Image (cartoon, rainbow, N blue to C red; front, side):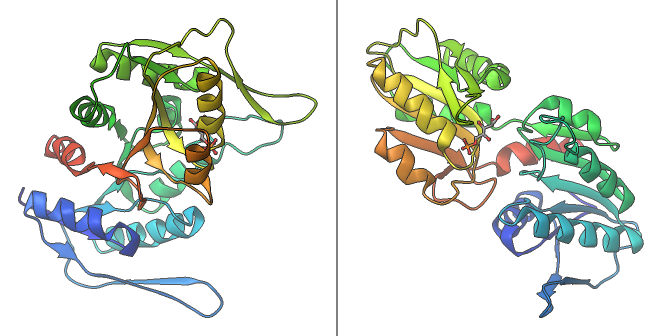
Length: 295
Ligand code: R5P
C-alpha cells in the first residue's frame, strides 16, 4: 500500500514492524524515554506533512502509561500534519463502558474524547469488550474480530467430540454464538454474578449437561484467570471431556496460567494482541485486511 507510514512504540514493535512489512510501508522512528520522576517523553522526527500514519499501539501492559504514550504520539504526528489512524488491538478502559456501581466514571468515554483531542482521525481495535463501547468514542472506529482466526486454529488442531461453545457470562454470549457458528457447534452462556454476602464472583448454570463433551470457552479477555478458572471447575464437575479456552487478549496477570492448569484446562489459545506466552494466533493478517479497506 502506498502513501502510508507506520509508527509504533516499543511494546508494540512486533505488531508495528509486522504490519509495515505486510503493507510495504516505511516505519517512523519513535524515541521514547522516561524521566527520573516517571514522566514519559516522546520524540518523533522527520517530514510527516500530508502522510497517513498508522499508529500501532496496544495499550497493555501498563495501560495508563501506554494510553499516555498514545496521546503524546498522536498529538505530535497530527501537529506535524499527518493523518493519524490508531491501530489499537487492546484498547485500555474498554471494560469501563458503563456504570457498574453508582458514582463510577464511564472511563472509555473519557479515553475516546482524549483520542479525538490529540487528532486521532480513526480508530481500529480488536474484539472490543462490548460493541456498545464504540458509541462512546467520538471518532470513526471499528472493532475487527479475531474469532474466525481463533476458530481456524482450533479446527486444525482438534477433532472435537460433540463440541459445545460456552460464554462464561451473559455479556459474552454474542461472541460465543458467533464462534459456535464457525465451528458448527452448540452454544450456551453460564451465569456469572457476585455473591452478595461474600462479594466473590460466582459462575454457575442450572441444569448444565456437558457430560463427555469437548467444551470451548470463548472470552474476549483473560485477566486474572478467575472467571475461566471458575467456569472450568463447574464444567469439570459436570464431567465434561476436554476444556479449551480461546480468547483474544490473554493478559494472564500474575499466576493466571497456573490457576487454569490447576483446574485441568487442556489449552489456552490466545492471540498476539498483547505480548503473552499463549499467543498462538497472529492478528496481523486480520488487521491488514481491514486496513486495506481504509484506502
Ligand atoms: C468480563 O466481562 C470479561 O469478558 C472477562 O471475562 C473478564 O475480563 C476476565 O477477567 P478475569 O480473567 O480477571 O476473571
